Image (cartoon, rainbow, N blue to C red):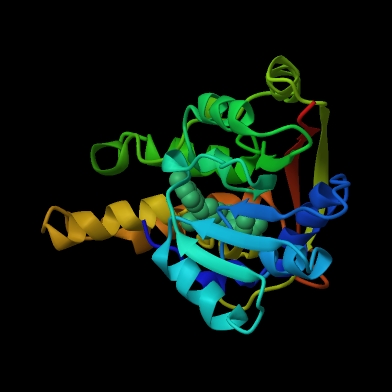
Length: 273
Ligand SMILES: C[S@@+](CC[C@H](N)C(=O)[O-])C[C@H]1O[C@@H](n2cnc3c(N)ncnc32)[C@H](O)[C@@H]1O
């Protein structure tokens, strides 16, 4: 699956805020090594390098496009570097005393087991801070999912989208932390994003094109490349049907063309005892 850093950064004002709400609850004074897992285009990882100039900060991401963008943007910051790494294969070494991950774990089914492994490897005093979108019940997701699983589209893209049980409830993350020798500071916030008017497409579609729709785009492209796409059943058709439903679910402000987009996120912060 390919990411488009430019499109992802389009809503950076809205997408950045949870990162600061998350890292605002990390009270490390002088960490040596801090890792940002699923760092994306690196604009937020950079703020960790600025906050802790004595620390070595590493942004890791499985997307070569994201890492290339991060390296290109921030190669001049000495204590900051980026690498292509799959979080599934990563473990903290004993020097790591800060782990941050913002909006990545929802992409990893079974991530509670992975988190447990990371927590077991953290050394005393190390901080752990992750934010996981918990909005699989939002209309933007439900419509996308139901459409993909409808009789019309199911033969092409059934099972491509992640299921809502990929993300756990806040209390489950809280117990996970406490059961692995961590303090636990767990909460959830529903942000109300006012998305700006967009001349080309519905603002919520513009948002989801940067993230949730990416696996569908990749699946349609694969079908097209292998000649398995029936006439008139390409990604563009799926997207315009999706947009049609979004217009009802997220009516535009008649004066400004803005859309109100509610987004629930779960925050999990702890320090190793
Ligand atoms: C929604 S973006 C979040 C980017 C950044 N953390 C931010 O807050 O702006 C999710 C990122 O997670 C990365 N990602 C998804 N699965 C991953 C994995 N298994 N290992 C590492 N990175 C992963 C994606 O490539 C993408 O850059």
